[in-house]
Image: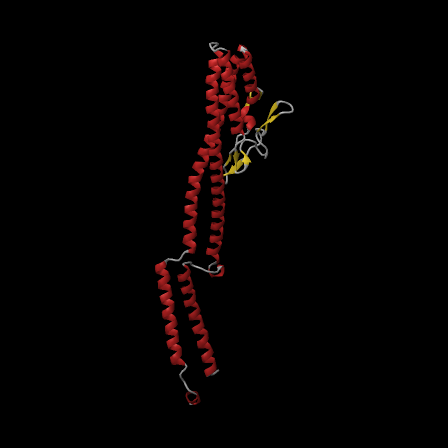
Length: 297
């Protein structure tokens, strides 16, 4: 079958379009800095990129959880130290009162300071973090409440109400301390016992004052245990945060290897496709110069 002028022209156009498209793809990769702009250009690379981005998303979630855990733990640790400071002063006062060397006026002054420390502890116990009570577990009410109707103290937040944060695929940490854990003492609560201490100081009940010394020691030991727990959790979060950052760097490196173009090779590829396109233009220009007379010969 004889090739006519129209067939030759259409073939030349198809070849020029192929060369033009190849040059445009090379130019797009160079301009975007990416090995592919559509998944169809590199299905295998696109699949790896999707999986790696999913991994990075998970790592970002763990990082955010770790940052929230760190902030909450730091706030809790600060308040626990404040409680410990108040208890240390309370220990000094109870020991002084228990020595039996202070008179009624001094006992009354100590009772007044004990009441002030109790109020400070209530304020600390009702500390809020991001608008929510820090020591009330899952509840939204204050952690320490005085019920005037029954003249009794109520603690909100059971030890079982654990706020957990997932900081990796396998690690979860508890980031809270409840008021029951913190202020529970001797089968009751610290605030009720402080009220009793104030009463004993005002009435000169030596036996009650003596027993308060052991009660304060027990409370201080409880707070120390809570501080140790919070400190251990903070160390775990810090360690995992460092590991998460290393994993992110590794994942980003793998993603860059798949997606990002090598600049030198990208420029070389574009120049090669550009040269091929120019060559195709030149060859086509020469091949379609024949006139009708040339075909009729």
